Amino acid sequence: MNKDISPDYRPLDASTIIDYVWSRPELREVFREGEALHADEVGDGNLNLVFKVWAQADPERTVVIKQALPYLRLVGGGWPLPVDRARIEAEALQVEYRLVPEHTPRVYFYDPGMYLFAMQNLNHHVIMRKGLNEGIKYPRFAQHIGVFLARTLGMTSDLVLDYRTKKLEVARFINPELCKITEDLIFTEPYRYTERNGFHKELEPQVFALQADEALRVEVAKMKEKFMTQAQALIHGDLHTGSVMINQEETYVIDPEFAFYGPMGFDVGAVIGNLFLNYAAQEVRMKDPAQRSDFRKYLTDTVIELWHVFEREFQKVVWDQVDPINMPRAYQQDYMLRVLQDSAGLGACKMMRRVIGLAGVADIRGIEDVHDRAIAGSLALNIGQALIMGREEIRTIEDLVEVATACKPTYPWKS
Ligand code: SR1
Ligand code: MG
Image 1 (tube, rainbow, N blue to C red):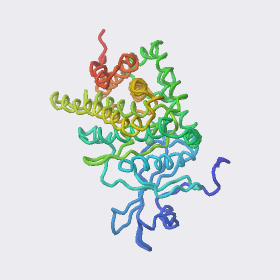
Image 2 (image 1 turned 135 degrees about the vertical axis):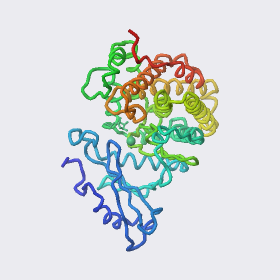
Image 3 (image 1 turned 60 degrees about the vertical axis):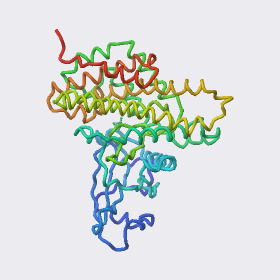
Image 4 (image 1 turned 180 degrees about the horizontal axis):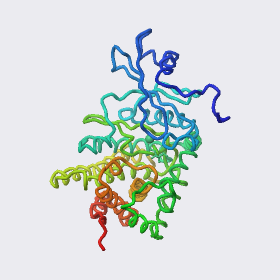
């Protein structure tokens, strides 16, 4: 066992977790003395054990317990990972819950010896990516995520926090190993040969052309530098549609284990980029053209609305509170424009990695027919490339959507 790991640490399983639950006084508000409990390991992500524990008499009384493993689950024991990320995730959730409780699950406790935390279950919600892949629209998502982004990003930045708190928060959320995963998987590996890349053969010509494009690699390098150096706000760090639990009324953001102080555009861009990944996938997923164009309009309207909500909420919680002598209106406008352009560039990197790199997304990699998958992947790459290369010309969210929606797949190749 790694010497940095607490001697109390032992990975739990579906049977040992029940005794563990009874040992936690914090869960006595959920479970009643002596009642029958059930547990299941439900983790399907890349990194952790995730358990649901519920009362047999009333499954509405369920808690989720998430425990860090000392290695990456996706590839087995060969890729060690710090278990302290469970603390980062629990503490990031606590910050987010303070700022935006209506979109953050409540944490009951964090156990520093077991590197696990217990949180509110979301019984009535689904992973947004799954819903989008089934063609389900979520009309309130734009409003909810716009507010979530504005409050969590704006209110953890230097614009709001005092000079000392900000620096202490940067230190509390130092997360080097998980940042390194992002640096490698998003900004480095998709643009060079590595065995870990996961694109399929049909896409080789487009991927090889993209990897040979030095101008593109220059812009990706600038995005990587921004990710590594701009401690602008406490970002979620992995805000794709698989980190959103949703239904027609409510939205919750989960899984901030990649949280650290980074550029705001990484989170905003993650949401936008993942909506465009779904947009690209619909090229082949939705066969009926009228239905496809209607669903795509929902996706692009969502991108536009979430940005406008983000701007309005940011105005309220940040700009209306600052001193206009040192932060005049023109500075505020320039700041928002820079966040928008960063969102285009960083979101683009998040799109391209999902097609080329190790960890794909079900929207595209879940398409069974290889030719269909190549069409969707090709479109996603073209949107990513257009957004990163054109980001400095983008002045409004409508411009961003126009750049993306002008793209077409280049697969099948014209000879
Ligand atoms: C190796 S971990 C792969 C990916 O899963 C997470 O959700 C992050 O996106 C990470 O890059
Ligand atoms: Mg995750």
